Picture 1 (cartoon, rainbow, N blue to C red):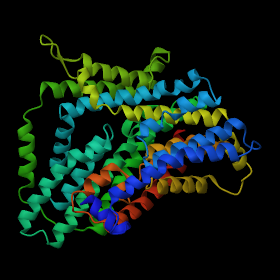
Picture 2 (tube, one colour):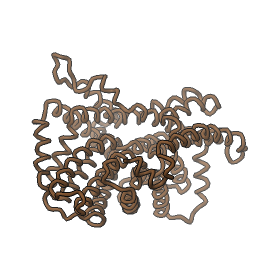
Picture 3 (cartoon, helix red, strand yellow):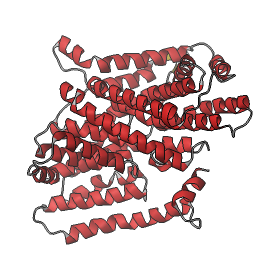
Picture 4 (cartoon, one colour):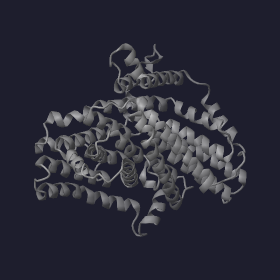
Length: 499
């Protein structure tokens, strides 16, 4: 159904989405290296040094492969490790170092904590409990699903969150269809569409709140450390990210329940019993869930109060990466049954870890390192240093809008990997703290709301059959405009006060 809806909207009837993707990948496979060769041989050194030309050429190659998915994204991310030493941009040691950057292990620790939550289904219990609290009216159920989806997505993959929430939402919509007697009822259509859209969007919005909530956040934090040796702490990120998330969720709830899909449904018969039964089937809080909650709470405590603890002991002993890896290791050390040598996680669980994302981070950091050392970032900065006609507010608004538009068409990780170093150059040109521009652009990279192909949660919920393409585009545009205003205003107020 997903492929059929997309193809009927944007493609000729004679060409399916799968066929188009195959053609695009074949074209991209050859176009990437061709662009590299064209830039390398046709651009003469002048404003750009020979190393800058190589980095620009490789960046074009990588973006082409990322955009067309001609090769697996992690494979494309290995190109800097191979090309830079061969072309003399850096040594093998320098080209390999970004793949072992501390920020990669920060995300790895977060992944391991998420594995513990998922394996022992603690995230599902939290979601069901929240949904039960918010009530069983149409709007109450939508609010419950939104809040629980966003809360879970703060800590685990937005895709995994969406996949977990879809069957629960499908059960509720089935109950409503049965209660109303027919699926053609306008109230049912509005409720079902609003519910599915709210889950898809909340999964992306929730990731804005924490550093480990979504890969672009980790990319930006890693770049800040590598370019400026500035440490964006977990707590400071949450001080900005949480208000952005809450305001975006508020805008989403208002759009869904008051503007676009007003359902006016009272309490839905059987929904409370359904949620109660699902919780009852899970049984009381198990020993494993209690231990996972303990590990998770300890890690979050040290993340949030790291700077206070370092201040008390007078040494900078703790950082977010150390805490993340310690929390991840604790999942392997916490015994469930010591006699049987059974722990919360064992190494076989690590096959579920998205190793490709970690390689992608390394490749992005490697490319950014090349952009900085070759002078490309400085060239961008020097160009913008002559532009005095733009205010900071207009600059933030424009860069955020560009990021928001591009993320609808390409991977948000690829976008931040390429765009953030350019933003740093612009910040240097305007003599601004780089975080004023980089953080809004990073938040905007998570605002992919317009199309099913923009982000996996959109595709997962679109496949439910309750969302039409035009409804996603219309809602996505309005939510994008709301988020653009929210991010810009908070960047000019709260962010400037905190940093």
